[in-house]
Image (cartoon, one colour):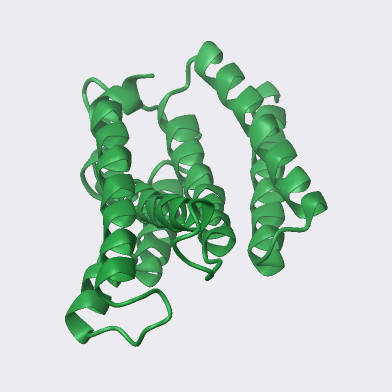
Length: 215
């Protein structure tokens, strides 16, 4: 996928690994230096919460997608990745969406690292405080939020049939995963409900796009 190459998919993977370690070692430091149930100093809290700007992610994703849909006429404009046209899409909307995707990966990876660290501390009986289920759930929630942004951007910009087919399959698996997550009944049910809504919106958009492209 040309778009994935342009935003640097390898860099996203590296960012996920780095911030997973960031969350893992941060929660380890908190446990040994202060205790997981202690009131943390402002500096430590700032270190823990630094990458976790959910509002920033939300606004970037919302603004980026709205701009992208408008400047590409909801994906029906002629898109040329090599010449980067339409210009407003590639020089305004796409950079905002890229920032949202990167931030979503950073937040999800940090939550995942915190969950791993807390899980390890609990597994080796170094703490009686059970934190990891919530953070695993929050990591999954960030995937639920971030995937639609990435999927819609790629779907709009890369119009090859094979790309569209792969995205349709991936989106079907995404919807199935969200439904299974709801069925399992893990915490943060409201997050899952939002994910279901996103899955429905993605499905509606794909059906609409397919029908209009056939007309």
